[in-house]
Amino acid sequence: MKLLRTYFPFSHRGRFSFEGCFNRGFCSMLPVLLCFACSPALFFSCTYGQDMTTDGNIIQTTEISFPFGKSGTEEIGIDCCQVLIFDNDTHKRLDSRLFFNMDEALDGKLEATSGTGEKIIVLLCNLPEKIPEWEDVLNIKALGKVSVALENESFRRPVLSGCADFVAGETVRVELRPLTARIRLREICCDFRGTAYAFENIKDVRVYLTNVNADSGLIPRDTDFGTGTTGQRYLNNGGLSLPDCSGFREKGLIFRELGKDVGMDPVQAGLDFLCYANTNTEEAFGRPLTRLVIEGKIAGKTWYWPIDLCKMADGGIKPGENYDIRLKLLRTGTDNPDTPVRLKDGEIKLEIEQWNEKEKYPVYF
Image (cartoon, rainbow, N blue to C red; front, side, top):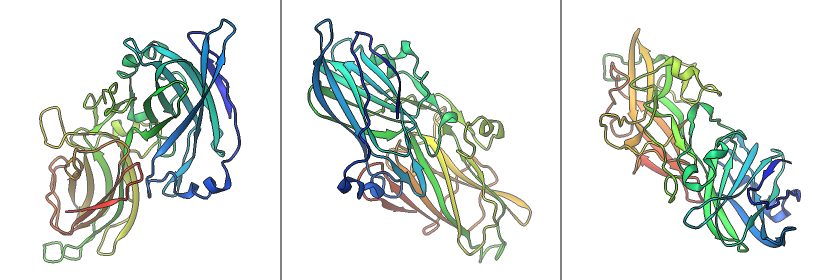
């Protein structure tokens, strides 16, 4: 690990240390620490010590430790981390800001410093060093207005953030969550017996998200300072837009081709998509619902099966949640990718896994 750059507006000092892997007992827990299959919380655990600058100002040293983990079979890691500490007073000005480059193969510890008194810590991971700009972190209210774009997200290195209040010198734990929600089409099949297309397969299958919220605030929406910044810009609005899909740094985040025909035998699709939160649960002008769309051809005719994801969970799509879908299509879809299908009992099974220690729970439709 390397400390990239340290900046303290009020002449505080910062330092970085690495203490290697955690003890054997903790390492035995690593396989279940961070994965979308089990979805436990990822915490930064902080302890403090006291020191003094040459000009006599008292500062506090913050030690931050954290584990790495997996999302299914993929490694979820941290390439870089920003630690921002603000005064918890009327003005909430920046106290200190540090940048760290992480060795993704190892677990370690960071040390940051701050002044004394009541503070707010914000942790931002997997962001370029230039984001946010310096003028946007001079106080936490300004930081709460900063948004990031879905086009720059990543499956293996998603943007993670968290914040917490603490008093310098005390211990604080900060829950770290991704800004994105993960949508996974795990399995799909069809059975058209009893219809005009009995025993037909679905060909040229494409799967994508529509009405995708493309911006998210850096600070969680459920905090005092997070705006959420949702509903400002949508991708694939009303249907598939290849220009929208081509603007992503990492391909496949909202559009994939299945590459297989879908028939009566379940196809293990394993297609993952990312999107930002969409708390809309009823369609309204300027407030579209995010949908998972299955597109394919039956006997040469194109059909669409748009599924309202926002209606499948209380409160719509939330950051840090993982929506695991198994789909069995029993009838033809619609002729419009923005007209949702009404699925019968047994056609869809949704499991929601949260980014914490709760068990996953099924929702049947």
